[in-house]
Amino acid sequence: MLPLGRRKWHCVASGFVVAILLALGAAIMLERVSEFPINLHRKNGLAFRDKSSFKISIFADLHYGENAWDAWGPVQDVNSSRVMDFVLDVEKPDFVIFLGDVITANNLATANATLYWDKAIASTAKRSIPWASVLGNHDDAAFEWPVDWFGPAGIPGFCSDSELPSSSLYFSGTTRAELMNHEVQQRLSISLNGPEVLWPSISNFVIQISSSKKGGGAVTLLYFLDSGGGTYAEVISAHQATWFQQVAIDNNPDGRTPEIVFWHIPSQAFDSVSPTPNGPISSPCFGTINLETVASQVGEWGIMNILKNRPSVKAVIVGHNHGLDWCCPYEKLWLCFARHTGYGGYGTWTRGARQLELTEDPFQIRTWILLENGTKTSARILYPRSKEMATSNIKTPSGTLA
Image 1 (tube, rainbow, N blue to C red):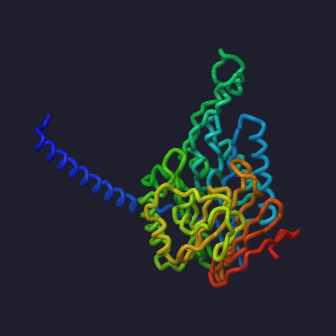
Image 2 (cartoon, rainbow, N blue to C red):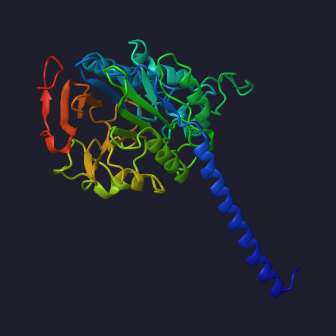
């Protein structure tokens, strides 16, 4: 053992060396971020048609596979598909976004959760509508063993104490990377695997919506970020923030192209603008349900500071909180919840989906929520901000806004 004086010096010196190594590691990591591809899906076929708008339907928190072993669970999946079928048939969107928690992996006693992922995207795929997906905290969550499986009835699918587990029951789940690899292989998926340097986050990419005019330049850019959860912390990392900043500058250096950002778990900025839970949603916020506290990320590592100082960013849209569907202004952009779409997950309120309608010339972002009962609510023009619509609560037989 070193003498006390030498031990103190040894600790100081070791700490100094560690600090240098950490600083070098961070510098190397940031340099690697700049070396990686920007993951922009430019030639994806998404474009405005001449003199028409571009419509996006957002499906949040579907939670396919919840209680997959009993009668209740599969019925919820059927109901979720019914909601999506209705929304897609009424709105006829050009593009669909799956905003995380597509499946409830912690209820899936199978190594191949992609089977449930495929069920979740089926309504969109069979209508030949392109889509993109961002991962949520439940998509790769570890399996949670139900307590009643240890009662007299035992584990579903086992007939006797001597029977070995079925080959279809692994209880090990499907990793985030495996889910995204499966997703990007689908014919109509426009999702991309994010740069490996951003691991363990996976779903980090950019999609361009092109002009109907000759040359087909970008009319808007859609950014997708992995907000974590499941097998790692619920957070957008500092490296993701740096990556976003680089991508945004590379692809939109003058900030002329409007940008919309999507991730699953709300950032802590949502807490700062939130209406009082269970209270009224007062102007300038708008929405219809405000029934819980914002369940935000565990840390804030720079992404919101970048976004609020980037005038081209018009809105951030998240899921995660099933009991919230409001939008509130934050600096010069909007922070919006989608709407709980799936019958899986907690909550009994009416299911629905947030819609975005973009127009090219002049550029405009319009939003509303279509509920499964045909009601269209919370209609508003998000951009330009000076042309905000009054919140409406309209039900029309044709499914169009009055």
